[in-house]
Length: 227
Image (cartoon, helix red, strand yellow):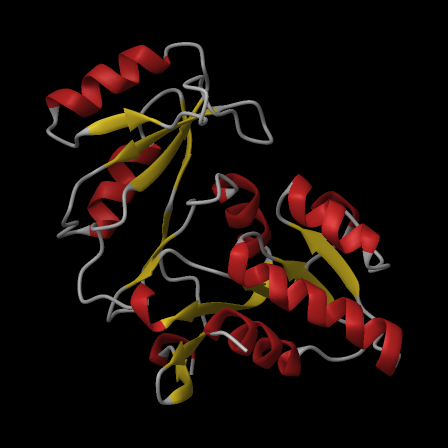
């Protein structure tokens, strides 16, 4: 069993009957969704899932997980998702799988958020992983030019055939190769205030618990902000 499977299975232990559960997106969250499906089928677990992407929706539907959209529920009890980077202050970068907008919407309406990662995702300072910025296509070249002038080293995210990658909301993604993000909250505010930016991949002050798969086994960290 690899790290991703280990943390994915471990995180489902926090799911209780009758919960509304946010189901994350990505290669680590995949194993969590598989385990939820198994528990529903084999152990009689009763939950309602809210998915963070079309890919997760397809996976969960195939497993027989009952689903509702975020607009059909009053809240989400628990969201379990992966992350691309987590710093020592429990701030994160997400969006490597291009699902950052739906992921942030679901996390925002969640009472509790758990991130599941392998040890390589834990860093002292954010920024080595390119920061995704989701933008509407109209005016996107203007945003790109502004980000370039500010020294953020932007790149449009492309598919393997060289065409633009479009998100589930039909937006584009500009990845910022910043290397170091000294002040995530300041950058988040700056990006949020740019007209045409729909969302960015800085997930700040959101995660309650991080489950890490490491060489020495599973490590669970509690965010002291939420204790």
